[in-house]
Image 1 (cartoon, rainbow, N blue to C red):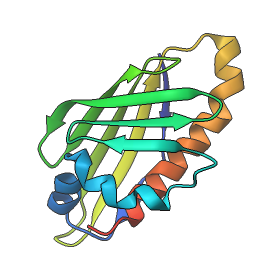
Image 2 (image 1 turned 180 degrees about the vertical axis):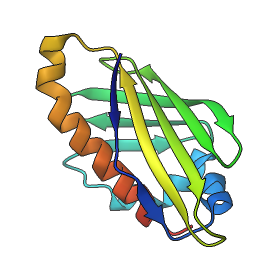
Image 3 (image 1 turned 120 degrees about the horizontal axis):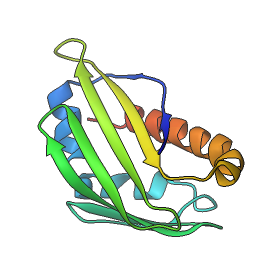
Image 4 (image 1 turned 60 degrees about the vertical axis):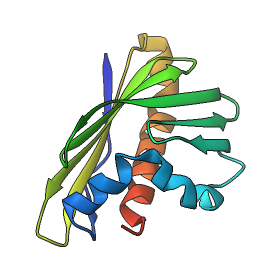
Length: 136
């Protein structure tokens, strides 16, 4: 399994606040309008899942498969051209800041990995940056 990790981001909110917002995906409904429509379309949320159309990849649906209160949220893809897992890890820095890192685990053959490695890493980094900037 190939692993891709974002850099560690500092979030200007407590670990508890960040976990509380991200562990219920319906809280992200408010950011829907800020997502560039050329990169992602038809973004929908429930408390446990999110679905998005990513041209030219297709529709990707993620579902929360495990919550470790205030530390980690694990997602599994239920609809994706390539099945993958995503983890959001949180570590406290102080009462008003925490660190966040995103990790994707995906089964890729060497040929496909060479083609998707850079865009996947860039997308993961962008996702981590956007999550770190959310108002918590």
